[in-house]
Image (cartoon, rainbow, N blue to C red):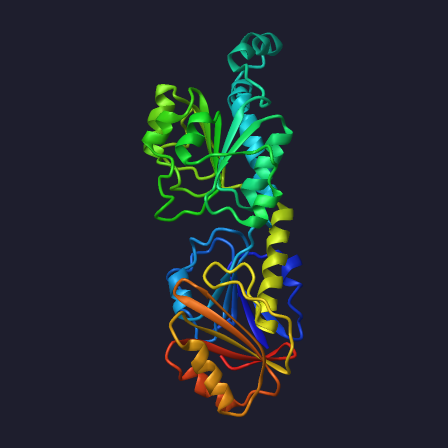
Length: 393
């Protein structure tokens, strides 16, 4: 029985993808084979010796200790694109909230006395007159699955769109509208954008990506939208720009004590992917990816190991995580050949300091082969997979 532990509420639609005759799914499990997580912090968790995969039902993985997982041969999956539509809709909503002063107008009406309400409403509405989106320029930093959907939607609304992402994938480049302009750098994007929206992970390179110097390049009354991660925007510099009138509004999914009640901050309670549809999409997607890894050894959408997918060819398959060091493939092949086993098909992929090898074999694998492979310096985990059943650790 394969143990799947859930650290958060994962949509039952996704959990149903784990057959009950082969998987035990529960929030209360010791030493699980798999952990499914949304936002729960895992940095202080002990990694059991059976853990093989972590599935993040969402895109961001800041709550997962990736280096520790990689060192233990644990493959971490996420679900890029599964919540893209939900975030896209919230970004479009954010632009509308800001351009039409909707939150401030709603708050004004909410506080009016009932006496002479109609007259007071008409008298006050001039203060909340806004502008329309067509003809305005949206700058998008990060053209992954979410950024591309936002770019295409904004273009269809009549906006000019400019994007920056030096690491855009070929797949996403094909999906984006040909009318979306490419910025050579963030400085160029900021100087041309009435709205700027960020869609990048938080890292040392992206921390305070929008800083005082780049804020100064924004047009007067620009709107900054951060539904990505807290820390992407230098909020101290941003508040100064809001106070001076340089920036019209800051829409953020990450409220903080000192900014929550600022009259130019529209703070949302981390709603980016909070739709029933997005939660279901993420749960189904991560369940399928984890199952494919456990039952076939295939890796798709991992954040710490390389993508590796190979059609089944032999009687039994070896799935091996190891360090990305010289002669690993040679040592693996030798250990198999010494037992007189023929290799039918094989792939080896690497990603930074780790690598992954899938091998289809003509015959069954003996426990001796698995034991010998585990003793090779640099090998992290070895699994034998036969007809969706696993052997080894």
